[in-house]
Amino acid sequence: MSNNLKTAIYDDHIKLGAKMVNFHNWQMPLYYNSIIKEHLNVRQHLGLFDVSHMGKFLVTGKEGEDFLYWLTSNNIKKLAPNKAQYTLLLNEQGTILDDLTILRIEPNRFILIVNAANLATDLAHIQKQADKYQVKLENISDNFSLIALQGKQSLDLLQKFVDDDLSKMPYYSVITAKSKFNTLTISRLGYTGEDGFEIMVENQQASLIWRELLTEGEKYAIAPVGLAARDTLRLEMGYLLYGQDIDITNNPFSANLRWVTKMDKEDFLGKESLSKNDSFAKKLVGLICLDKGIPRTNYNVYDSIGKDIIGKVTSGNISPILNKGIALAYINVDLAKLGDEVKLDLRGKLVNAKIVRPPFLQIDKPLLRKLS
Amino acid sequence: MKKNSSSPIKFAKSHEWVLITKNQALIGISDHAQNLLGDVVFVDLPPIGKELNKGDIIGNIESVKTVSDIFSPISGKVSEVNGNLTNEPELVNSDPYEKGWLVKIEIDDANSAELSGLMGQDDYKKYANESS
Image (cartoon, rainbow over all chains, first blue to last red):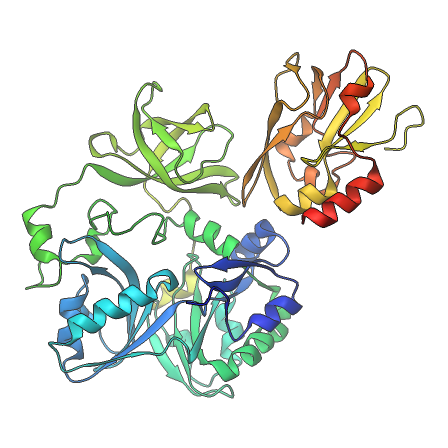
């Protein structure tokens, strides 16, 4: 594959002065100005993200529901039309091939949003599994862009562009909306913990809606946000990143993903292995530094007296809101007790950290609370 | 840094600057370096009294993106560290040559061997442009 893929919004990133980075063969904005300012802007105001690198598959056909019931770990039969669901692709061994979001557009029309890094392997895997079902799988990644609008005033801004009443949309709901940018698939969700929307739009319209959201969003202090702040924002919420916090070596239980692995389902790919062996040696926990310092990927975690290595950081950084080092780490399951102290080896220096259950901070979403 | 008694500012290939006044050397990182690092969020500095040889690691600077070692451009003993950076590490970004200085070291003698390999402002500018 080319290592030089560009989204339909690429030229706008360049004009905005973005520092670009190669992310799984995509030329993506890492940051535009300051990672910290972009992070804070999302928490305080509004941020706009180009996440068009994400893979997008369309699954249609009369056995669509049955197929996804088998293919994914969560229960698609509990997902009503116009709703979205976070779920996993497992292999036969019950380990994680990818994490994804499924948008149920119609009873038998589903959009799967998968990680860019896994697009090719996911496609092959899903295609192979689809053989036994009356379904059609289409990779629509090259036709559509994906823009995330995140922050407290997302609703006010996006409402200016669509007639449908977005305030009626609960969290994790989806609508297909007519707009001057043609049809938009709008889901109320995101990867930041803030209220917000992800907007799937035809490539031809992507740059236009991007620019209009930025222009119209000025009065809400909107800022374009790059992948670096997307990473610190998701880390503050304890959201997992495939390839870092989960991969093909993890079973879902070790990664706290039991809530999307419905063992009470009749059957799904990977269930047999998981029901035979659901044990795991290491468990994913949150760590918050009690001393100054910033944990990073692959740093070792020691026991509280600093004697034995008990685990490893998979994601770490500073929390710009807490101004403390935070991390996701896998540690020995018998030592993964909330509130216990451990030590982090920050490049040879042992600092104290506490085991916590993510998210690292609570985001109040009053608009969404009203709906639920 | 416009102190008359100082020697001109010198830069190391690893992007630190040093300004020598009598037997004191003030050390920081260049504007180019802070720009590459992005938002500085943590600066780890050595204890006062630590003996450093030219090229030794003084400490490190962490930005959101990465962590970088800081190398001493000159030999000497740490006499002062910039305590303001504990609470305001962003001074390294906003004012790398003044308020964002890192350490002060006492030097025995700024002899020519110590200063070898360091660049003047113009040469450094050229070097930084080429290496970025």
